[in-house]
Length: 399
Image (tube, rainbow, N blue to C red; front, top):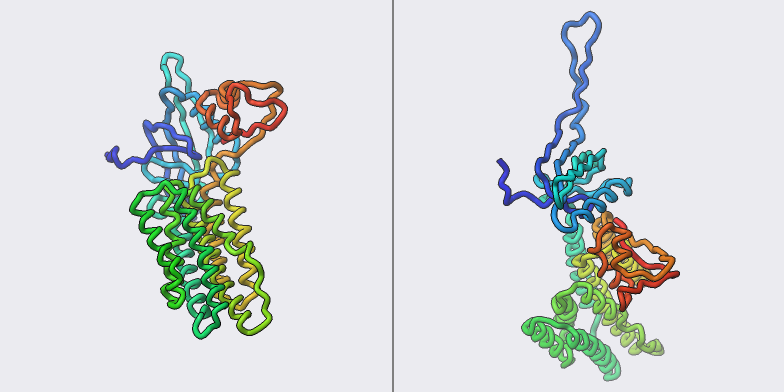
């Protein structure tokens, strides 16, 4: 008998339901050949058969009507395979077959389903699900090492005139100023914020600039710690996005002499170190974000992909193949992660009410329940939920 404490909550496309009994049909695809005038048949194995999952399910309690309607819509309105969270086998990519919905007039606050799902591809058990966020971490770790190596090998202030040193110090001061602003608005754990500010103090002294390896390490550490300042990764994402524009407003350095060219090279290296770590931070925080809809997820994915493409174009104009490859790997891992997680999310649809109506009425007409009232109000930034505007598009989520 299965241990109930080990069973996973069942759902399809993120819509939960309760399970009474789960039946799984497994086996091999066997064809038996019987030949004329032969007493012994020949049995041919054509490989493993597709698994078929049959679930005796129900939705129960307050709001069960909404779950009923969403489950039916998720099965009927999407021809692509979806993720079934099976109580025993975990996440399985399936295509829904016929379902039976049973309404018992004598039963209150409960409705029943007989659900059938056919295996649509490789089973994705919790122990072997493609770890897309882990791939981002791996790509970021490699990129971090590549960026440090590229900086340490080229940046130098040794035996440089004062204006070259001052230029590097000014660039560093701009960085510490931006990092301090990030800490000012972060409702963080006091110990985390104290450690973050201590690192910024070391950078602000400019003494680390004479030790290239120590300087690049501290820049990396300070930028990486930004994601720890914010409990909400979406806010951390915005902080990194702001930092990714570092240096965009700097005045160009005229390359009128060898020393000016060294000044420009050093500043370009400092800017690239910051911007590329900020892009890395955007990818890492995006992998931790929870998206309300497919459209929200894709918007973040495309925004970050565009920024990474811009940086790849910049690196592509040089002969730094290692950095180009590491950045490209980070982009590929980020796109895969968000695309995979977005696949089964609800889509945003614009509806156009003929007349003003309360968000509660709109929610009931769309979903058959009122649970999405606040989501509709907040998504459309309406102050008074009793007057959803007419004649203009109102965004709602459709499973």
